[in-house]
Length: 528
Ligand code: PHE
Image (cartoon, rainbow, N blue to C red; front, side, top):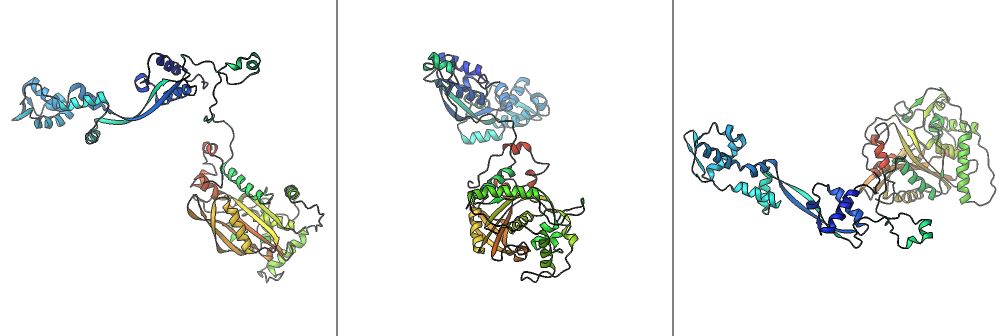
């Protein structure tokens, strides 16, 4: 039903009745119509100034079916008295079959107390012969008429005895408004060329805008909350001059995921327990240029360099993948670049195993190696999926999204990383960062990041960070005095905080309620 014709009958009835009666009382004049319908009709009329109305909230006491039957047939004690009166004498045993079990039980005692009847052996006989005053019934009758009980103690007593219930009622008191008419006049929703040329616009009635209307829900697609939060993070990164890295391939070689990061081949993280290995194809290529990623990264960098353009032509030194491969082997096996290395027999096969990447640092590594072609200050980020063979529970899935940033520059210090992270996290409402020494094979020093969330009012572990080791950067061919920071956090965690989801399965996977996804609002990190 179009909005305009909904409840039209009711609006017309209201206008008709107002013509002869003022004010209207919604509960008396339209007792059968729901509050919501009445309110909708009144709002429709009030927005056109055709009526004015006041809302009155009140409590109303009404009788339960048991109490209604008392009003009709008398109280339990009255029924007992009547039964004895009619028969002259009633056997106590037979009373329930005459007046009913409930009345026999409650009524007998009260009739004794009122001194209306007395016992005579096994039977009941009258003490009062003239019809006694049935005060319980009279009281309930009064309540039925007035719909109220003035004494609070009596009210709670009656509620306990299940004789009355209290309900909230809203009553609208309606009077004519300044533009009252017996019918809703035709209203124009648009100022048309016709109205203008004919001059009718001067006297025409225009429908007022309803700025409070929420609009109808659209049956359209919706962004997943993870994507909304992801976009919010992307904006933070872009606003700080970061270039997005191409993270499109989920499968990578052990080389890019581990070896190039100076993660030794016997490191527990490389175990079957933590890493998903891919068996088909059985083996990766040795590290080489990847044209698709190259093209994406070129485009992203070109976009950002336009912002920071200097116009200078720079010399680049193309990557030598073979030398990189050998230097990575050397730094693990024998030590190199001033490091004594791990000193174990490095195996090519381990390097060429295919894995579902366990962190996006695999991509950062690729981007940093690429940076060595033209070493210069750079800021890279990525937000994408990673995979770990974890025990699944309310907060862990075998796949999640990592937010990761790296900053390369000359003369960087650890304090600079802390300062950067303070700025970064303050943009999402997290302040007072604290850092705890941690361990990553590829960073030294490494720091876990904790922060105080103003909205949630508690401390959270929010990420991992560090300065990449020379054992990782030197084989890439980056200059000795270039330092690189890195940090990472999960996308799921801030999303769960923002959308108040406590079980990750409600956010990701086959149990997700699509209706919930559709209804979630956009997110703002700087607002609670
Ligand atoms: N790769 C790390 C992780 O998986 C995050 C990190 C990135 C740490 C860069 C330090 C530097 O948690």
